Length: 332
Image (cartoon, rainbow, N blue to C red; front, side, top):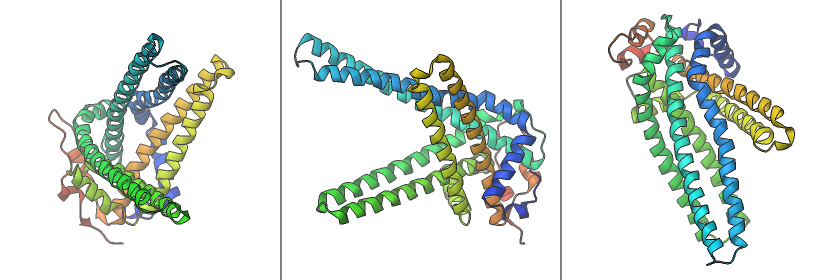
């Protein structure tokens, strides 16, 4: 990351992409090691979950059909009912375990990539071992930020549900009511995307600054002003790409029995490689956008102070203080 801070504020969509690609190419060995250690398990679990969930839900579906065709109260019906109950329990336990592991690996991957790029930015010597020694101390801050974000999302979804139910119950079904529901759906989607972007940037803030949780979200909200358009485009493109990879995996691997084992395996490996690159690219871009936003708001980062705080000795990880990373103003 060889750009001056003053220049980074002028980076647009393609400039951010170019900067992220330069970092990934220049530091491919370090980022490759991080990818193999953390992002590879993350990607594998993401794809494996799709396959396993499909198998479990298919069994539940077929047993429910068999129940519908069986007379209630008979031994066969009771046996099928118990089987469906146990399969549903296994399905939701699997989902809970999946989301727990996915969350942990996501936070660890974010910690590693953000810390590594911050070291690159400051010119600090960085190695894979150093990054991995810091990750367990940093990800706890990210967990607090995630839990706060989750609470906000929960309140947001409950409020949206109440509003939609209110419109359906109170107003007489008509074209006008349908138009209102469509408008509410669009507004909900915009709010959801905005809150997700705030969370992603707050994750970087939690690693590089002395704020986390709600304060990191507030800081993120202030930083993203002026660059929200670029951030939204980046977010949508990454998630559309993720959706395409998931669609290909479901089509060629999960439902691709007619293709044969070899072709399905090759397709699965291809999807895994695409997902690896996509996750890594997203985390790098997430960090680059942070530095772009800092530059846009003329919040100069003292590289020497950042470098000192990123250095890890035998003690605990020491995050940046507001004094080091905020509000050292420069003007263009």
